[in-house]
Image (tube, rainbow, N blue to C red; front, side):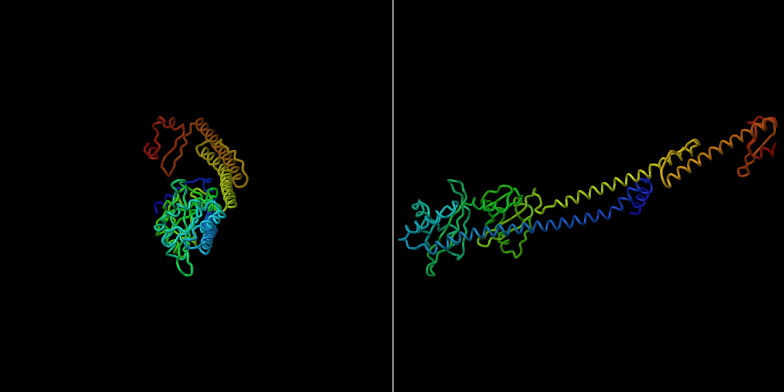
Length: 424
């Protein structure tokens, strides 16, 4: 860790002025970026909470409509149970009454039927009464459950062999004078439920609405990928657990992925059903966020603008200094004629002017020294005097050009050490 920190410091020390200024600006922006990230995290959490709240509200509204629809059917069954006769002599009167009643009901109602406790037909709303008289309903779930319960019972979805349409039968037992005398039933098409669910949401909104019975089978669906009616999407134990749960929460991982992404559910009160309302995986959030998008856009533009200005200011400061550095390197290499052309306000401009003044002074003094040395050399040659310069620190001697003639020794034979003079 220490080695890594040392490398980081070394790398930071090797950065130029421009890079350091950009890093300084970024360091100043870190608190704002952290604030922005925290604000967005809070916004995302609030958006998720609001989305779930809206899903719960939508599930409650649609569930209330389903309850109302089932309640209407239950009211019809109660009315029929009170007015119908359990006497086999009144079968024709029951047929006529049920036929008139069916004409007043929606077209999705297939039939109304009356049955005694042994499953024999006592009345039928359709014209083909002979078929009804031969029907055996003792083994049907709706009939058995209705005899055993004093509330509305619901059968399993049944597909018609002729029309391939799915229907569902609801039933309620009949009591006359406290005695159990039979069962009244109504059978309606399930596609009406799908149209009914589409009123509250649908694929256009990215909302998936699915109605599931107590066996985990689909009764109706609106939006999302198509699921066949009566297709089991969860086990009955899960449905029972959801209906018995004190809170409206369910782990999404335990449900079929075709039901959607975010989830809310509603327990239908009048039937053993569960209504699921979920968001499709590719759907937009329920809570609009145009103002947040504008804020993100302005934040990104602000960050980009800050980085651009940082780079611009760094260039305005670093470029003149880099030019001065290059000119100083040329001067140090011996080019005394170099002058910088940096024009900048403030300290950088003063530094550039001082550099030019120093270079001019150094060049003038160097030229003056060279001229003085040339005059001294010519004078020494004219007089044949021997001029020597002894450097005490290094014990070396520099001889003038006339030393060879005066000592009658070639110039190459004259030693550079002071000992040479002592020995000769």
